[in-house]
Length: 90
Image 1 (cartoon, one colour):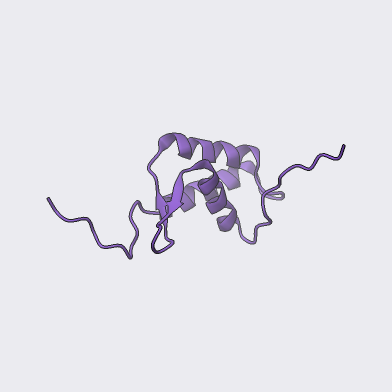
Image 2: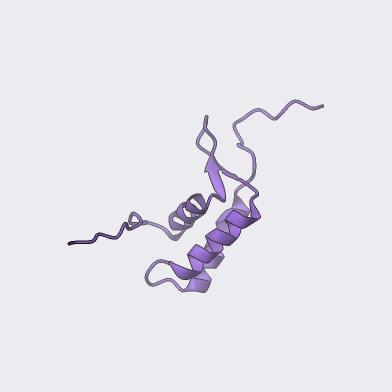
């Protein structure tokens, strides 16, 4: 019987790969209305993303460089959508 392993889609940039890893781990999600990436502020999801980057990094990229890119992308994403109105003040 032929077994096929699910593979991640091909990536064009290391940043795109890192965003995919962060989404897969549940560390970020998209704003439903505007599509901006938002940080979920989940430390367990961040650790899962780092573990994925360390173990399953793109060919030709070191584990350290992959982890650094995941951290850089995560640091560049906020927890709010820049196009959504701010929540009302209490």
